[in-house]
Length: 403
Image 1 (cartoon, rainbow, N blue to C red):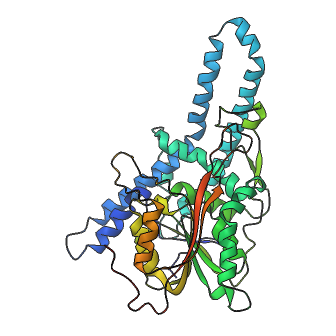
Image 2: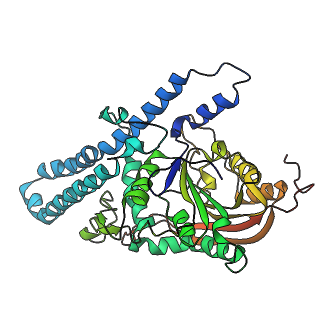
Image 3: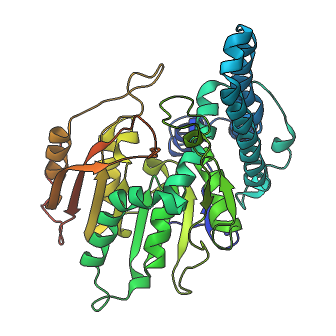
């Protein structure tokens, strides 16, 4: 298992900035071929990235209220008759403002202790740097944290979790039955762990589990939930407050949910539960290390999905299982200055088999909503693929050459 640095009850390790993770690792790997970048340069890149994410969280209220202000300003420009007709709507917008301000109070609590998120890095000085220069992509990621909290840590998000997580949890129980194994000795990795609910559920069932996450947006929030929330339904949020359209009723925009719906501290004593920060393909390089790797809404986050397949093959123990569920959205497709390949599932399936994986189970077109408002007049639903693969044991002569 990867080494981790302790932080309260859930371990956090390998701090790498989202935009610079590959550069940081590659400089180290290529140190024999060329002169590495000065250590100060890497530190500065990491600090600037950390500052950018913290400032995005801090700017949530200002940017969110600016959108609201534009609506109220437009209403004020209308005729007195139309303004009179919209009195109820203006009252609703006042309630939206209150909800935004409350969400901001949650954000302040989330980022309160992030300077010490990683035990081997001190960002105390970085959080003192304040800037209002925030791009819209970062702001959308901050706003999406509330939807993610809804999905992973509220009672209302149970249906979504059941659709995405339950097939994986059921498969783990099938492959590692309690009467045949010592659960704490089973090492399970969950890359793309988001806010940590899936690895938490695996650990709560008695298996040792590490979640891996690349995004500081997610890591800030998951650290708060897993390490700071000691109880049930402690906090309330308004996850849909930024959804100004497709609302059947005004209340649908300002409906409140509470989190967490379970106590994140409820983990068996002998179980090793941790989170690791960084790029999946960069920080995991110990061969034959994991009994099981669970990927949920993850493989399409790669620039090159083959890199994920290759890493999974290398770090799985012989006889280990790869359990996957999700669509193929391909997050980097068509983004400026981003390389991306977007093979179909048919192509991915073929590549997986060429690596030598044994396909044990495959289900197609599984309905899986993701962070969707159940009251909305519009919703998206993926038709996900679910498969279970095994790395052969023994593996000698089993891996075919990948063209």
